Image (tube, rainbow, N blue to C red):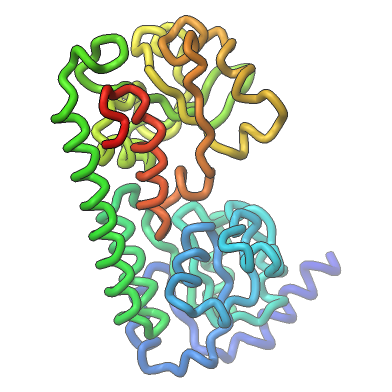
Length: 310
């Protein structure tokens, strides 16, 4: 009861500030001095983009997934971005909350808006075009449109070079020189392992975009989003290589144990123990490190080609 009364009192004190609605464009922010901003960044990709635009000095707190770059890990943490506390956020007296699509709970944006905080929840997109849009929108809000344009151009150039490299590699190697005689490598991205089975990245995910750009088939492409894939479907897809989110591979011998997983051990990847960890924040979320994640997929599938220098 005391916490509720305190929250209501605090909301009343700051309710004289101008309000904004979640999802609006905030074009008026371009006229506001950025020195007055106090930003809550919710979502690792959001935080990383703010840093990439050199506006990190305005972040007062982040969610617990915002761990990159290293400096972001030392910022005050408000908990998991899907379950943030309104009272905890208000304690930092922010002017803005910039959040990934799943930022919550559902009541959070409305409560913050009523308190006079400008709330921007960004739509979740999971490819390079979506990354460009996200960078542009955050850049506009933070009066950093030129830096956002330069960052997008840099990412476009890097991705184009890597896609050309992957295409050249594929053209230089016919199906007879690929392991198993496949025309294309098949990969599977495992996000987690539980009693229910393996949760994998299907279509409309960042790993799907990475595999597409690397010229690799996603063994789980028929699924949408991150879903549990049954053992029979994994065996039928027969991936040549498994990528696993790094936060699920921290224990000693975690990758070796995964090779013996009932769903994997009879696949090409399981028999050869071709399993590789990928840094979770860049492999699962859109960030300016997308080119580095793409480079990882390309380099770790090089062993399947006769000419591994490509």
